[in-house]
Image (cartoon, rainbow, N blue to C red):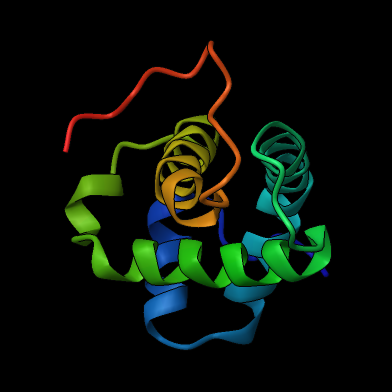
Length: 114
């Protein structure tokens, strides 16, 4: 697969149009970093889920997040900025939902206000 979308804005437009290459390019770009994040979360939060299942669900969540955002928010975005935004959003969403109730958070993770 070749990168058919040259900018983040083009990629998001492709996702919104339902182009299969857009989903593939997003997965190829995001999967290695996302896998590292999820393995670290799984280790640090004592998660009971397998990394492969979490990666596929998190990739879908990233796509939904991008499709829900207005396109002008990404017009000036770089690939690195988009990757950072997605990893931040996914980490923020996944930590409180995935942690088991009986596993205390690590001391270096700040408590979030209710």
